[in-house]
View (cartoon, one colour):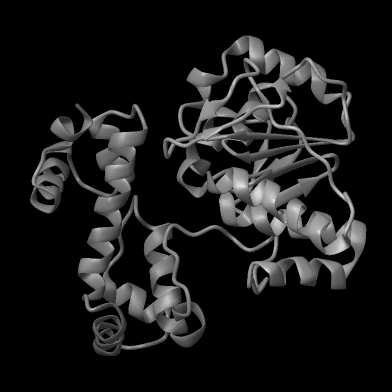
Length: 297
């Protein structure tokens, strides 16, 4: 729902500010009928995908299980129709559909941070980057809802100017502080990124070493502080020790892999830095009260 809203509502606000239809859009679904979003709310369709004339921009929005909801015939249709548009974009898992259609071969692209590794592994001809959103030639991709909002502001700014885009952002009481090239990170640090840069750097090191955990002493050395000071900062700001935070981050990552992927328990154990599947299963059950196998069922 957020991905859909962050795509459409900036254009709606732009029209309101301009007092005219600066942007027009149609919502197309695979069968032309309303669809139920992940949260359960339905969204009405204007037409069936493929049955309308080509226009300025085609934006493909997709979420969980895109390979199930969009079979090969739809992917082939995207590949065929894409050439009729001046620009084609993928929001969140929409980038997967574009990549399956072969549109992103030889181009830079991104997708949601949870799926970046798998995305890169499946589409070897795509230059995968961790950026919030990417514009490369006539193709653009975003990492999710918030980056899509930034992308739409960029689109509005490029067509109507900086001041107009600022007015649109103000409608949502939004301070645009992120750029396209800013990386996606699993943990949203909020004000800590600016108020406590040592914590921010330490967390980013943890995020980048989930599969091969390093010692807290090593992290402290990397962020140029002492272990004691790092522990004090984590305790004061996050009410947890850096070691426990690191382990929590790895366990939470493994939970996502259990529920959202088909990776084996052994593969998940390796990807989250556990020495064996048995060690991983013990840590997982200790944290969630359930074994990873039982949670998957």
